[in-house]
Length: 436
Image (cartoon, rainbow, N blue to C red; front, side, top):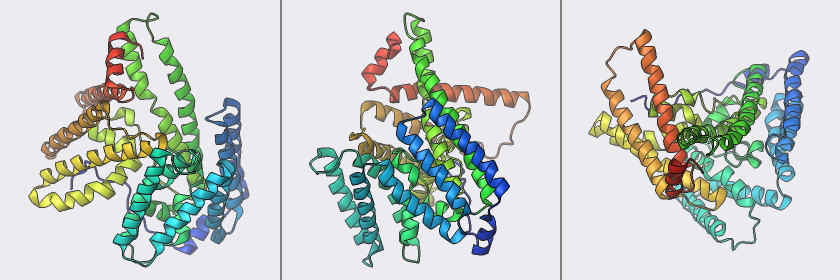
């Protein structure tokens, strides 16, 4: 099996109850050391008005919920988190939207939990999705427009993972697991949400002592906060590099780089989301890892959005690879990667449909995904030929790696600026004039 798209998250065994009880044991001094930085973070959110006003309310709910759940007996901890998340829907959302969201979620679970054959449950859910998509696209249902982005952010992608796991598990799905997986408190504010794996989330609950897990969560929230503050600076810098203040060439290069760096807002939000879940004992993996230092397209794929990469490996790459590998190892890898790229393209457009009521199938999307897919296929072919070569060391190897990082950064930034523009026509105009 090639390491090109292999998931990095190991299979985690659910810890025994007595071990979890020990890991959840509270301590006054250690709690204070966790509460103080959280209070400082709240102050930063307030002073700098981070995100929208609802974000501060979310942070108060999460940090206050952590303070309560930390002292609860272990058997009550997750139940409290679920109740807090359900109640949070009515605080962070319009009450009618929250009620419809909870009712819809319970109805979907009723279908999943029913005793009929799995294919009929799947067909029923697909039919409901089609009806909802019709309502989203036409606006003919008497439903608030604010319902659809939240519904899409919660159910559209994670439901794929959940159904995949339900199909193969030997025990009936539990309501508690369902509620804790879908009704995640930060998801009411962050519609663009990392695709958390169901099994990983369930098995990560108090798999380590709560204190280092919470400390890591606080660090990730802090790191995400710095990303969001830096995003403001990068966004404002775009106006600095505009003709006639600078030459057209300088404006084009600067804005290409800045357009790519604006992705830091997504990474900041994802860090905060994962960090908040850590406070409640969910020891989830990192959402992205130094993607600006990627040396190849496959390396960028592994670093840029780790949760999405693992999602595609589980749902698309591995099933396709095992069906195709009789025709040859490299052939199976290339075809499976092709399936991953096409599926990623479609699901990004599908996700954007729920968020913005637009299904993105445009010329710039075609160019971007064809570029990304072609680079990944070439990269995989090259890696297959270099497997038997000994790794190089010394200054020449370091120089080569530095040039690879610079080259990959430049290449991705160039095509990213095209993908983030409104159209190919606008992008070509930008390359000629330096103005967006």
